[in-house]
Image 1 (cartoon, rainbow, N blue to C red):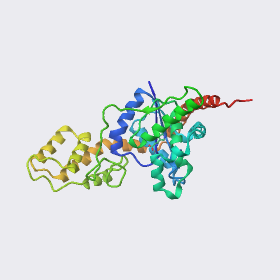
Image 2: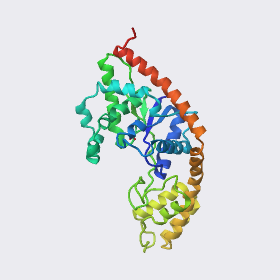
Image 3: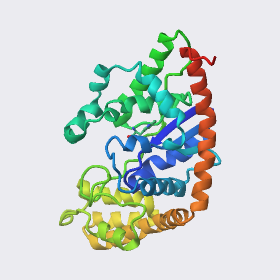
Image 4: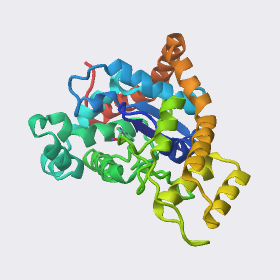
Length: 329
Ligand code: TRP
């Protein structure tokens, strides 16, 4: 049983790519490990310092993750801002993080380009806060995508540096969590690439049946095969990849046959695909809405998570203070 920490940005909604890609692995992960899942609401201020509805965004992601199966009885699920110990560790780690190395971080350089009007110190020290999130529970593993690898490497560096500076073997250096089999890649609806957040490419779990259908019907196709048994171009293959995860095998086979015989009608295929996607998504959508309208439940989940997280976090901060040399009179 290893300790795993994962932070979730409170921006955007979960789409089918997240659901079939990452979520299934998260569910597996929480069964096999001591998991801490938290919503990184402090981090979100680095890009959105005056959010229109911070609470609403946090509530939305929390509801979506719970609806997908994150289980507050199995994992510790909390809001970053409910665990003030994180900010103390962040402050202490900041003393051993150097401006030069922070300025060289890829994500920081990206953000300078994207928001030149708001190059705040929180952006610069983003990796330090993230390291605090992770090592405050002495996590062994962190599930990370490509874009977070450098941040995790920095968390290892800060953990190691702390150990070296104070001549202790205190923090574990967190490693990437390996999901074993390759993640399922869900393609987008715009012909190429994988599903993302951009308009017209993704189907979100909260999309209602009408929106969902409209998106599928608008998916990129071509004028259809003209030769028997011809190879499928990427946009068509993508529709079949989606079918593979939501439709019955017999349905898929029959459309494949129609394609091979040049008898396929993309309109029919899309109608079927939309129907089958909706069958999978509808119960999750209902659950998201049920959870969102149940403030008592959400309050209970957040409270329980905060208590468990603070127990582990306060122990770490207490020990770190002792290691550094803070002492009561
Ligand atoms: N930086 C992560 C992201 O953008 C979110 C995050 C914050 C995180 N703290 C973390 C992820 C700690 C893993 C562990 O997705």
